[in-house]
Amino acid sequence: MSNDATGATNARSTGADAGNLGYLALGLTLLAYGLLSTGVLHGAGVGSAAHLAHLLGGVTLFIAGLWQLRGGEGFTGTAFTSLGAFWATWSAAGGAGKNAAGLFLLLWALLALTLTAASWGAGLLSRVVYGLLTVSLLLSAIATFGGYGGLGKAAGWIAAVSGLAAWYWATSALSNGAWGKVALPLR
Image (cartoon, rainbow, N blue to C red; front, side, top):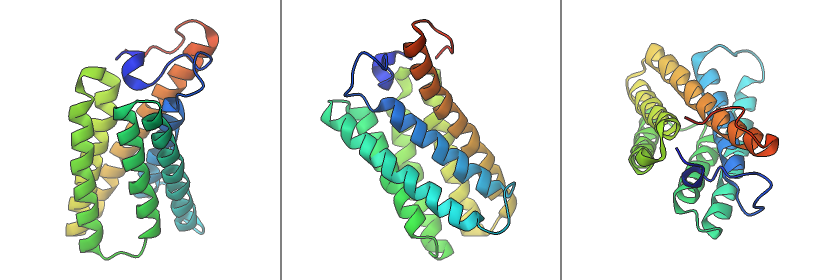
């Protein structure tokens, strides 16, 4: 994957690129969603933390996406604004019924599939992030429609791995640019 395709350029070379911010927000939001879906984290306050993480991640992604669109980055701008809208809406719709939530997840899985196809030429890490996001949302939709708790947990683990890949992507771009050498490879 080239740095041009990802928006992951040297952090000091351009102040107009919000790609790294977007991938950090996507990664951390997916990690929160994934880990909370697995049931690893539980107890008092987890629901509130989930809503806060999804809302904060959604707003940050949306702003990063608008920034990218303004800078002429059509792919990352589209990905970040749409996924930002998804996470912010998901946070606000916490009490939705299973059919509404399942349909919502299924429709956003279609968006993630479009992002996967659009990013195919950008490299392996891009395909991993968006491909795993697609699989996670699809499995989450099926689990929500059918009430399959085990499938929902599997979807959570897949989302967490996608989040780790997005987080690595941004960390690599930021550290490689700041250190002046490739410390964390993108390929």
